[in-house]
Image 1 (cartoon, one colour):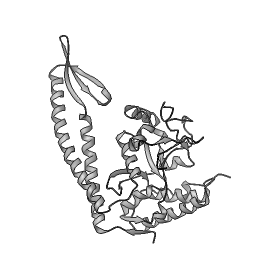
Image 2 (image 1 turned 45 degrees about the horizontal axis):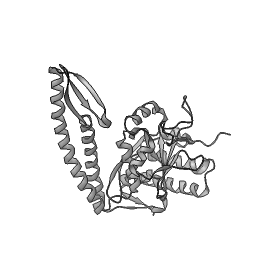
Image 3 (image 1 turned 45 degrees about the vertical axis):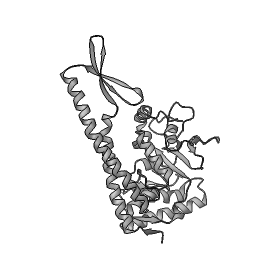
Length: 328
């Protein structure tokens, strides 16, 4: 058997936890416009409204008037209302995560959950998707099963950067973190770019866990090579075969849970895309090691079985011809 069903208690907990997590994220988004503060500032005989943001940023909202006084009042009223709801849901989430741990509702690696949350908190969630082995954690959580450990063992996670949105990415990155390496360090301060020559796409922490960044092969005037930021220590996503097809896959989005109960949202490719890509990797990928080819076949078989049993749903209908082998 390639997977086992989780207990009824754990299954119920995942359903309940997913609801709390979704509501928490909604409350967080709702409260975001009211982060910072708003106050009146005088300069001589002139008084105007100032909005404050993170990182000491400020914005003048206009001279004091009936209009700006209404803005001021609405801001503080909504800040209280949304802050109270966020506080309540934060408390509910803390209790939910304790229950997750007690009922063994999850086993996604803690570092992966921390990375996903760091990316989300930096406002970069829409620019990256998880591809490769770690997608199995989202699939098994959605299916209510535990895939056998042999199919999951890996010390690196692959993040596919969406080069189609590169201009917006640059704006979003500079708005908060400034560099992708800074985002990784928020998850684990020991992350460093790999020092080996030709490994600029990878960062590794003190426990040997790697984060690899990949991108589609160059097309439509994509800049190449491309470093995520002007920071000399930042990462350079590496081109990967057929990565553009992964980027075009329907998204599979599902909460994942670590062994400690912490939660994150994983964005990955549709299960059918995963199966077809893994099959292509096993048969056609250049310089693919035999042991990895065998694992590709095994992982594809497991995910296909979950779909065949009705435990996992797919929105893709790409067909194997989507991932052809190298041209003769």
